[in-house]
Image (tube, rainbow, N blue to C red; front, side, top):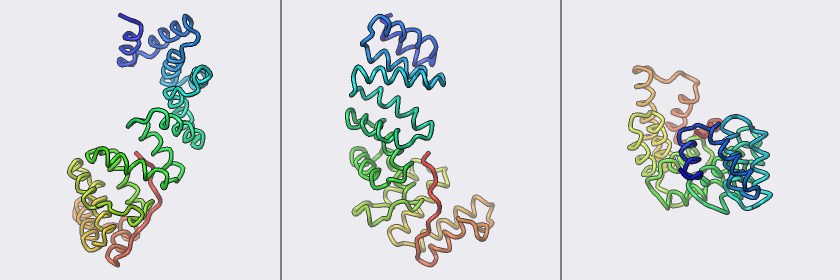
Amino acid sequence: MARGNLVRELLRQKRDVEALEVFEAAVAESPLAQVGLTNAGIALARLGRDEEAIARFRAALERDPDYATALDGLARIHSRRGELEEAEALFARAHALEPSPRSTRAIVDAHIALGRVESALPELLAAQRRDPDDSWSRGRLLDLLWNCQVEPRAVPGLAWVELAQAHLKANRRRARAAAKLAAAHAAEGDFAQAAAMLREIAARAAENRAPKPGSPWSRRVEAYERSERFCTEPEPPR
């Protein structure tokens, strides 16, 4: 089996230690091979050996500063460590060099983690235009709406209810998807429908008991009944 195919097969089987040995052999034979250095970095990162992984990614970038896979690998380590500014900058470079669904998700989540929703929105809307059935971008947009991180009027022309109905159809057993549909009704001004939906979801979840008074859920229902939006602390993306 050719070395490249062997490496891919080992990674597919998550045999990272063996894959790392092959990577290191490739780098030893070809010191300028940024691909081998990057693959070694990926394997080391999977094994939790972050400092060694960082060294490999940086060595790869010394050979090719525009190697997007190395930029992405380095960014993911920074993100995992909570070094969000560094991660965002690296993800942005990787995405600009080689845009893909994976790089879109990475840069959007980096923007949202830093509270830069205005930077995440264009990427999310573009992803939805490319593929209206993309559940990831659809879910992220609805998360932003539910968490009051975006004002509906800031996205003119977006049919929030239609978006949320598609999300619920794909996640029909999830109460959270139904709650996002309620928020979408509120975004389009149908607060009565939004309040009724939330009460029904809460009743089902609590065996026909009303939401606990004073809880964020209960306050949201009450706000909808007053024809007002309700905001909670933003939840982290999942």
